[in-house]
Length: 292
Image (cartoon, rainbow, N blue to C red):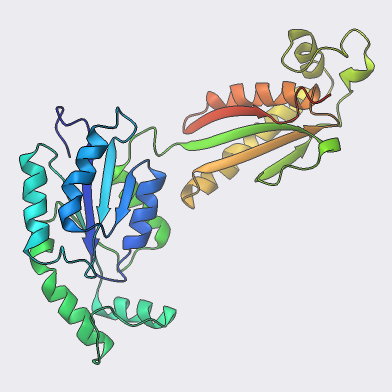
């Protein structure tokens, strides 16, 4: 991990083919790392330098390397030493698994091993294990994925490379009007039209759900508070399940007729309550507000 002067963290992800590098790379991306796959070794230091000069836009760079890269000669060792000398101190993650598990994984996807050549699958695995033995011995963290599910591997990656903010579920709470169609990107959709419509109240018609008058009217209706409490409890269960499954982004949509009054007021209130729950980062979007 980098020191306080470099302003950027650097990770090198490597290991045996079939041991979970792709899953690790995707997880790091979800955690906010800038991930580069199989960058030529002579460009790694340049990439890190560019990230360090990005004025804070890139703060964490992960380089994924496998046997397809020429970096699996003495180049990779020299690159790591060069980065260390520049103050970046890369953290090296090595993924491995038993031969039996690797063979089963390759057979399941019906793919050959990159070092198999004309030999058997086991020969390719043995050759790669031998080639990477030195890198494994020098790695900061070795993860054996033999008995790990994809979700368990993600959890270990998050524990090693995540921050408190990056591992929190990001929730977008969206208001919309049914007259303009359902939002296609919503994970959960809730209909708010069971509440009286402020549109039919002359003194409220020109206001919207962001205004206190409409908010108080909507939230004061019979069933509104019970709905908010029940829906929030449901979302705690759903959110916890999504988190266990590695889903870090959740879009909740609440709709009313025009997306101006009821849905807007309820979205704002729901977002406020969710933001108070641990483990969630919340933003609001009012898709159809202003269309009328």
